[in-house]
Image 1 (cartoon, helix red, strand yellow):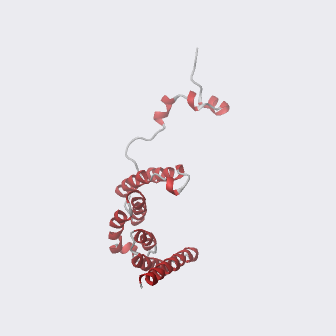
Image 2 (cartoon, rainbow, N blue to C red):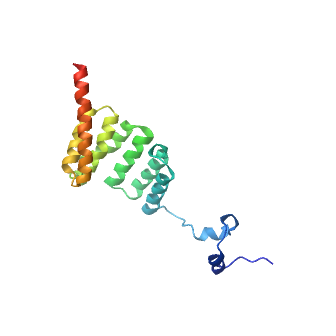
Image 3 (cartoon, rainbow, N blue to C red):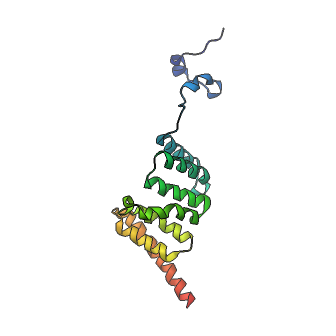
Length: 169
């Protein structure tokens, strides 16, 4: 006669996933509305599945951030959603997501909006606007390592703009 192992038996000898009693799983999987923590965990899981940035499933991450924005809207969620949109659908689409944040008083002293916006503007070929965004971000930033990075981006982009101006003359 076969019997299902008790939890104690399983803990002592372990079990092979293929031989586990899956009917018991239904009680352990949460059902009902998905909350912010589940969505954040799902986003993290999708990121961790990719060996490199380029291999990330940006469509899925964009959809998860869209869901998170409905469950727990915030400027930070919108910033992250814009990054995912930029990767999945291009920088122009991302700017449509970011632009309303320019008028959001919660973002008036945050460097992050400009730090996210700058490379997206750059990807659109709007180099002077990107340079301005990097400068604003650097000015608002209070983290020295982040400020160094932003200043390196300012210098890099400025050199590119200067070279472009020389070649156009």
